[in-house]
Image (cartoon, rainbow over all chains, first blue to last red; front, side):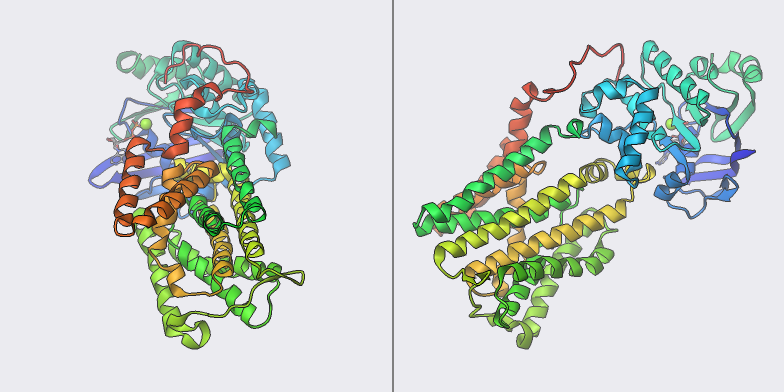
Amino acid sequence: MSILSIESLFVRYGGITALNGVSVEVRQGETVLLIGSNGAGKSSLINAVTGLVSTSGGRILFEGRDLAGIPSAARSRLGIGYSPEGRRVFRSLTVRENVLSSTLGLSRAAAEENFAWACSIFPLLAERAGQPANQLSGGEQQIVALARAVSTLPKLLLLDEPFLGLAPVWIDRISDAIRELQRRGTTILMTEQMARPALKLVDRAYVMRGGEVRRSGDVAEIREEALAEEYL
Amino acid sequence: MAPDRHRDFWLDLWGMALLLPLLAMPLLFKDPFILSLTYQFAIGVAASLSVYVMLRMGLLSFTVPAFMAVGGYAAAMLAKSGVTEIMALMLASFVLPMIFAVPLGLLVLKLKGLYFIFITFIFNEILQLIIFETPKLTGGSDGVVGVPAATFLGADLGVPWRQVFATVAVCLIASVIAFAASHRYRAEFTSIEENETLAESLGVAVWKYRMIGYIVSAGVAGLAGLALVNMLGTAHPSSFASWSVNNYIAYVFVGGRGTVLGVVVGSYLLIYMTNVFNAYAHLSAGLFGLLLIAVMMAAPGGVVGTAVKLFGGFRADKGDAPRPAPAGGAA
Ligand SMILES: Nc1ncnc2c1ncn2[C@@H]1O[C@H](COP(=O)(O)OP(=O)(O)O)[C@@H](O)[C@H]1O
Ligand SMILES: [Mg+2]
């Protein structure tokens, strides 16, 4: 069953068309990759799902429900977790406050439980709990952003370029964390420019360019057919 | 809970601690200048904490004098009608502005930046207009005069030292409320200040917390208004003039908008300087302006914010696990 269906979506910023009729499906339990270089429209698609950008055509169905008109905060409560491009942690909040900032509506007890859950996936959080996020390295901040997104136990996790600007050792650690989330049954839609590490993590991929999907299919197909010449 | 209590909490607590000596002043001193400074400090801190609460969300609210007026007039009218018990007056001047804040908040809290500032400022002007146009109710341009002294469980608070003590106590309670609210909602307010859209996309009901902040800010200002009326014995429109908010905002920015300590230090510093400059009445406005510019140029984070930046490095990690060198992570 599809948890997310995006049907010929259009996003425009003034005169610029960032998405030109894009369709993407994410099924329960799978990890799907949107791959493409800078400006391909990956973030626009993710942000259309979170409600941060408005669409000018097409539909987004989450669990069969049209998201049109549902404000951003409410989408999060429907079960959409979001880790933004460039991490964007709240700099003056502590690690723990950052992780819990996505569960502010919840009772303290429930929030504690979610934090404990996040710590079981990302042990780093427990060590750093009281530290302001602006003292963390980029990789650590990415872990915080991931934990913040999953501490609500989302039905669908949106990861916008989790490897951006990270050294290889951190790409490996983030990959491990994503695998751990997959083991726990998380459904993920992620974007990346870096094909090599990203393709190791996913079931299917869409190749995007110029606001359109150029190719899509299983990882094996994508790797062989398209990416050899374009991205690898 | 310990991990949440980082440096800001202790700085805020220090700010609260700096307020306690004000309570002792009327017990220790009879000098009118000292007593006058004491109640000016107390009221200034309470009023600027009302600004501070909203600034914690990145919103510069100019509605403070109007909420002070609602609280002050409510107390004055209540006292004139025979209810002089300070607890009852406090309740009225705390709750009434909060009720006013709900419809005003609905009007204004979706606005941003300059629009927000402008409309919140207009509220002051509208309230002044209402006061002048309703002489039967508010005394119009004469204000509510001859307000009887407040009482505490039957004890008369009209004696000068008690009057100052009660004023300080009211402001202290207002400050505790502002402090408590800004800590209860620390994560919410900070996430909204740092990145409102991101907070929204993570499920933070931004609008709800703005409303909570505005309501708290109104209640705190209302208590400051009561304190002022209690000190002056009248509720006069000029006590709540729109421009007075500039002072409160100046206290917050000069002291440092990030912490309660900053608000307290800024209020003490500027109120003291104002009293000194008043001796040179013809120069005072200009001197005050120069001081403001000098502080903001030398210390853009305010006195406390800049001090923390300069000297805070040593203590920033206190109590946390030692941090290994970042392992290859690039920002
Ligand atoms: N806020 C914006 N205003 C105007 N143009 C934008 C905005 N955000 C993105 N774009 C444009 O939309 C296109 C797609 O951008 P984006 O979705 O960020 O791509 P990607 O995430 O794949 O790098 C680009 O041409 C970009 O310049
Ligand atoms: Mg992007």
